[in-house]
Length: 412
View 1 (cartoon, helix red, strand yellow):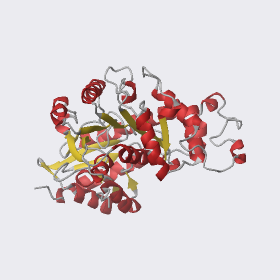
View 2 (cartoon, one colour; view 1 turned 90 degrees about the vertical axis):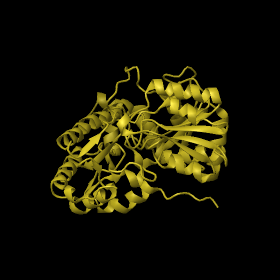
View 3 (cartoon, rainbow, N blue to C red; view 1 turned 180 degrees about the horizontal axis):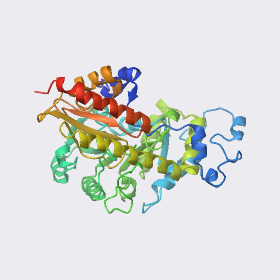
View 4 (cartoon, helix red, strand yellow; view 1 turned 60 degrees about the horizontal axis):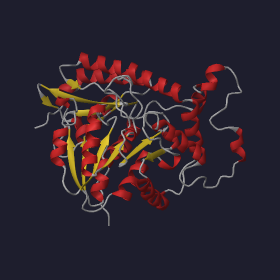
């Protein structure tokens, strides 16, 4: 029987979310309605008051037979994703290089179950989303955590990676943009990772679910991080989703993509046992968003992220006596460390009391992203939410800093 560790973050959110008045724990960019999505279409930009703009669900869908649809995802959606990944790639992807899944978690599940075996050695960036190391561990792989530290700006050490490689190393797992820190793996580091993987015939698994929410770095920056799909190495596979950067978590559409047809074929085989197909309605909305609304939707979300990040930064600057961070570059979350007189507070108690007294929900890093003694005092804050909610949540957090923070226990 396969045994897997409890998913700490998901359990925590499922338990605490109903009690929150101000949810600053969400990692998705502010969810969007279909009506608002329609207003962001390229067609709407030319006729904002017209009722003739093509909606996300065109009327012809009413005549569709609601069968399984395409087993591996709609051709239109896969073609659009292939074209987006091919913009900077030397060899363009085809729709056959893309597989649609019900969310990125499902994509990662397929990747590990299709490719990972007992006895494999897996190197995983850390901290990161728990699935990326707990799932291969449950399959019998040995996991080495490639650790980063806030004191070092969450920088990945390439020399350390070289020393972690073994004859049985099969995968290097990365997350870019990164959860929970909001850091990126810059282009030069990505290129070094790919070169090491090529030298040792290692497959790189890249969770790119927060791509392309880059609010604090420009595409013209020489260190702007491309998808690993564009770096000229076949043994890479990425996962992505409509949930985070595209504000459409409710439609449950994700994907995996690779230039290596053998990797895709292995995932297709596992997909047949798990998914069969994704909802035609969900795929239609995803296609509409990526084909008709992409630039306006990203403008909305990057603009919101940049504005709200300024509000969070102002809070941190006002409370430097108690908190510190590495300012996020991308994504929708920040990892903030709270201390008293140089000693990290108990993050779990902090989050619990903040929720009880002020109704503000944030996530304790040591519980949801740490193993053992890691990330004491750290909390994850989701800031790409409705601005009013963030403002009110930060006001309540300020009140707690004045009235309840002094009574928090510190870590030993």
